[in-house]
Image (tube, rainbow, N blue to C red):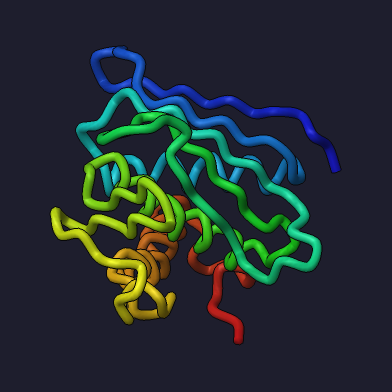
Amino acid sequence: MTNDVIIYTYSNSKGQQMNNIEVIGGTKSQKKYVISMAEYCCSMLMPRMQTLDIEIHLKDFKKDENYGYAWPLEDGLNPREFGLEINKHKRIRRLLETVAHEMVHVKQFARNELYEPSAKQGSRWKGEWLSPNQKCVKDYWDQPWEIEAHGRECGLFVRWAEKNGHSKKKWAQYDL
């Protein structure tokens, strides 16, 4: 394993610089796939956004059983800089579905659909403030932003795999 950083800045058809994606940690193979998945998610979820700066850390979550996290790196509405942490010890399909899931959260923050100023204040989802005591906020599976992210992660992975010629590979098949 290596901690070399891969930075990928891609350009549109007119040669204009677009989003910047940086991957830190993980293996060379993981980095290659994560960059590709993050780029794909940007193109599918936020096709007109060209100024995103996304830093993805592939790391050992130790005793944390979660798969990943995403958050804006700047305060305020419509952030453009984001941090993601992804558990690098998951199988490659699960790891890439997690990247897709967290990229849905990036979209939610970047489009100002989700705003979480602090745990005490609650969250604003699509313009509506939700109290931290509401069931749909207290229960992870009822949070509307998680419903969207879980609902889109598999489809994003499947379409990415098809587009990149990976859909027939054993690791891309769904495993229980």
